[in-house]
Image (cartoon, rainbow, N blue to C red; front, top):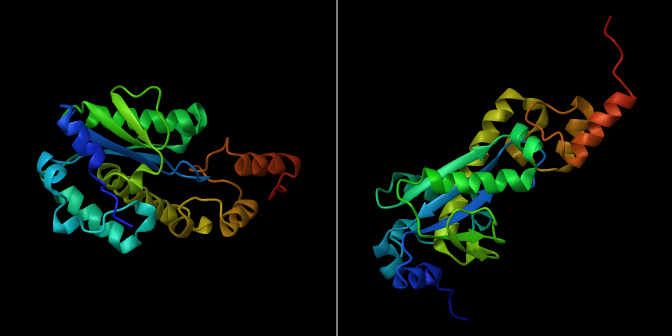
Length: 223
């Protein structure tokens, strides 16, 4: 089975005079706590025409990479003077105010605004984003089909994981460094035991149920 050409979408758009092309992805739509983080990455023309540098050999959907490899690619991308990138986070309070879909789309649009050059086209992981401010090509499983999206997925994922490790130091009873806010059994048990903390998404069902239980069975007064 031949390898997938993960620059084919970028190359096609480049040949159609639709460059700069931004790959866009997000991390953190599903967790019960913490921010959603989006990233946009514009790869240089010469990489699109001739291939990625050796330092990015093996770049892929961030979920398919080891934490060490994600950190390695993150460092390479952040230090490269040839790419343009942006990373935007939307906190749990805004997610509760807007809903997760709107918060994610806001982060994606903000990423485009914060790029140092304005893209003419965006390759978006997943489904079409109706509010996006540039022409777009939505790609289901795009982070494994486009290097631009894969690069954005790495930046978003590593940035969010680092944020959650910081929150773990603030709220060590929840285990955020391990599960990154996702609804694992240990996380749900911690919520049942301690109740939600300020970075939990209060409108998400497990957190909402926990709050309802607290109201039904309030903790006894310490006095």
